[in-house]
Length: 84
Image 1 (cartoon, rainbow, N blue to C red):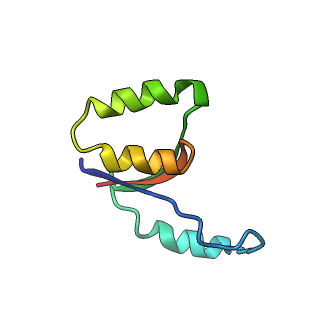
Image 2: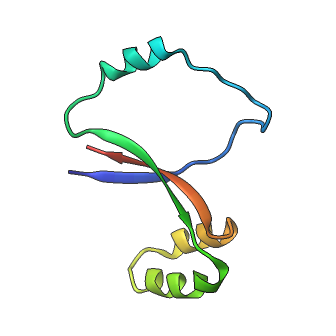
C-alpha cells in the first residue's frame, strides 16, 4: 500500500458555512474501492516536547522542510493522508 500526506491549509473564512446533503455522501460512497481510503490526522506537539521531536526528525534524511513547516505553524498541523 502506498501512502502520501499533505497539510490541510485553511483557505475558508472562519464564518463560512457549508451543509452537505446526506444524498451527496451516499453518492460518494459509490466511488470507494477496496483498501483505498483517505483520512485526516493531527500532529500537535506540546512546547516541552518540541526539541525532542525535532531531534528525532533530524535523524531522518530529507526532513528539513518538514521541520521548518512545523516550526512555522507552532508544531500544530493537520494532514490529509491518502492511502492506496
